[in-house]
Image 1 (cartoon, helix red, strand yellow):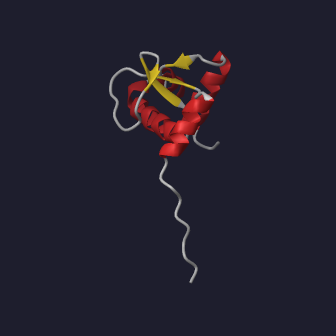
Image 2: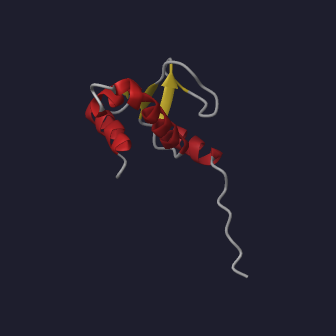
Image 3: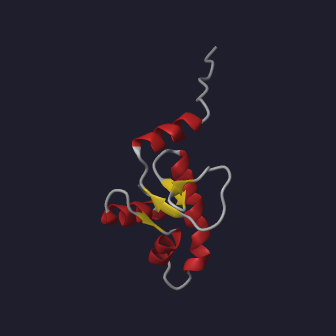
Length: 100
């Protein structure tokens, strides 16, 4: 894992244990304590990408959000098996190239 934002997200979540969540601001503050507000959009973008890969769940009021339509205060947590399967089913199919 070469992305420092990804590493910070998973480091914070692994320290808490299963079912626990964190605020995106916690990750931003860990990475740039003095200017964490500047880091926050990058943390959110990275979290959204991880959610689409089925590696993270973004929640609002304790319920998973639609990755294509959400706003407001959110939290991050590790996904359940069902959430991972749902995220992977939403991904577009990989087209195999024709070698002819």
